[in-house]
Image (cartoon, rainbow over all chains, first blue to last red; front, side, top):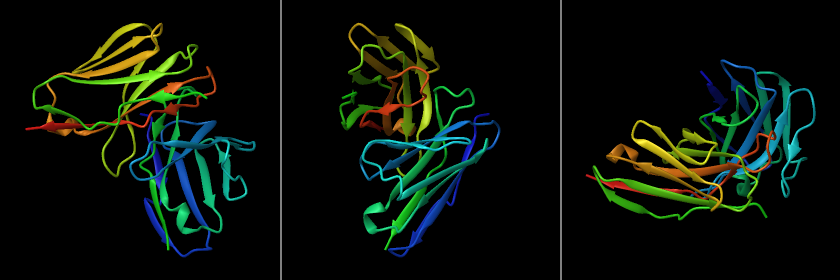
Length: 115
Length: 112
């Protein structure tokens, strides 16, 4: 149980384009999902909390207009990196919990490379 | 500023030894604590959860919590080369938000 998937697992795009990353809870419903970013040799940094049916809550310093989050159903949240630039290249990971409280279970991550 | 501190390592132990990983946190009111293992290039995997003072054992892993000292640790007995990974300590600072704050992780190397 508590399986979270992400798609795609990796993506390479040109600077200025937008990239959408999907996060799905496969065997449970998740009213809340979390999006993290991890740069090489650094820890996970929480970007935002995705709430089903309402606006996402962004952490301080995260541009909500650049990182668009949509949580349209109880099993799917999407993160769209708009007008991506090389500095957005990172490992993006989502997580969710069957109970709505920790522990969180992580998706396999999406490695984004912006050329 | 709510913080979770870990020694980045690397911590090197011989195969079969006990590896001890430590973590301190800044918020005395924290109630939930987690250890995740992350292999290079992969996402974190939950190893242990602990909520009460004392020890919690699961197979070769033992989590220890001391809320008075704001300290949580992970012991790995009979360490194996496959245990070589980065171990992340995570703390839920505010109850019922679900948000976790992660330490920078400790890299463990188990040498055959």
